[in-house]
Image (cartoon, rainbow, N blue to C red; front, side, top):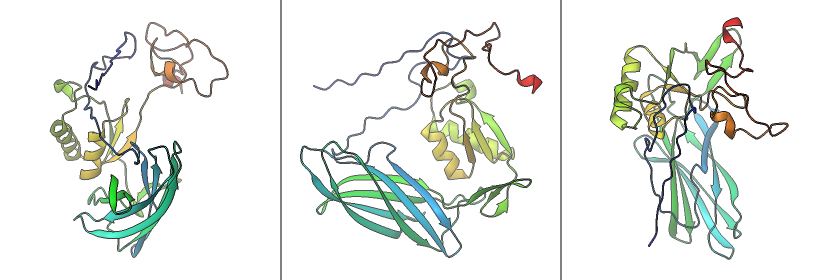
Length: 272
């Protein structure tokens, strides 16, 4: 018998508003091979983008299983929006027990279709780990091929064209539906934003759900992820700052908030 336990620990004075509490996002139990790409272990970039050719770089963490060295083949395929393979690469690696390695492969995509807010074309990077002829693990990452630039005095450029950012700040809840993630409700919310003329979402002030990011990438919304609204300086007694110990010069208790929920060291933004 295996027992899976989920522990929740909502605390008073942990937010400046009611954030919802409990298990309000989807939870998965994923069964994987011992030799695998771990969760969030695949990272895709497009360092070179042109009309004729785009370079796609796939960086994977590879985690071995077992007590002896194992040699595997890491195969990377790039699929176009229709699911057709348009680029591939393979590399052999030796994995020592208990040692996670980072391995990178680059491929070229001819005549790439670019991701844009008016035409959100997405490719898929598929990483397969092969032990001989047997596929022991597979990891897929959807991505867009595009260029993003910020030019001083001119603003942001997407694929070489100036784009005015018409953005809104979105909390993670679904209004009257509450904080529980509902895919269609989130999708509808983003569709309404687009109908209002919005082309960019700032997630405030929580890590966004995977569903939100999936939907924005699919329908053509840019996203600025603001995972937290404070770091080391407290805004409330039990805020995010209690988890921010890296980089502190000394271990100390966070400053107590005042009656308005602002820490004594919080800047007065009305005076800046």
